[in-house]
Image 1 (cartoon, rainbow, N blue to C red):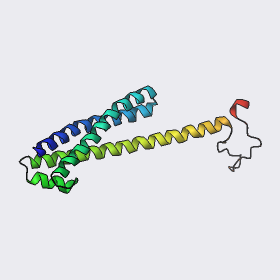
Image 2: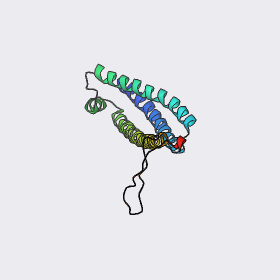
Image 3: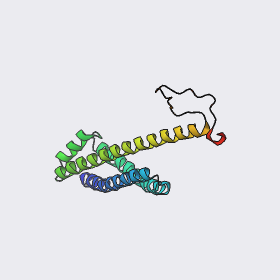
Image 4: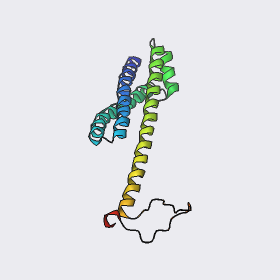
Length: 155
């Protein structure tokens, strides 16, 4: 009974993780296009999936703990050893772990894009505000000495 419930949770989580991975990939494309409305839609779609994955993770751990097993791979293997669906449970658990790892990697990729965009935007704003000057060179290739810096709006 417990192994059946656990298998059902893992199977549902595989579907959720696949949807999440698709959303993270769509988020990457929207970040590249700087499509803020699409990013908001994607975020609204990601939140319920993340919540469901978290709830199921807690439920899976509770099932293992209720059976006096550890809530990790070793506990899952012990439950699978005494279950007729044990091999399927382990295979699906491995598939879920791989999908979640792919989601984590894709999410980190998106984070790098966001940080790069933030740095670029900060630099542009600094130039527009007059606080930062772009690196300019004189005719000899050395750093140009620019007298007084003025914001672009005052130039």
